[in-house]
Image (cartoon, rainbow, N blue to C red):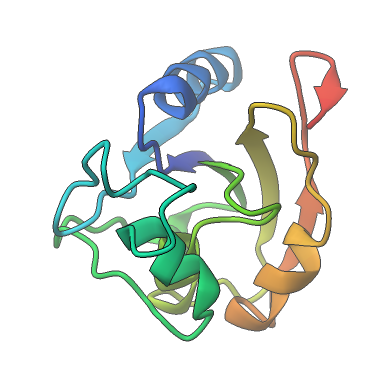
Length: 143
């Protein structure tokens, strides 16, 4: 079985996740923060914005809203998120560290205004050390 799990701050990643889940016939799960991000929170030009603070301190793990998914029944997990500061938002680490992904394949897909994956897969690996993490092509291209 396949799962598409995603975090979307603006709605763009949600749209891509819904399309992908439909294409794959996969279940879908939204990784939602306990406190939704506001436009001010996402202002990357403001060093005191919530997202800037989180991305500057890689130990921060934003809390999720309490909704959960049983990942044990899935072989492949497609994990989507916007690229922030050339990597995944730290709520993705929260999600990965909240589950046992041993023996699972996690395929990353991302939305971005122009950034590529960079070191995203390598930076996420410690949060799911027993999973195979790889980049996934979305709409014919690896983002």
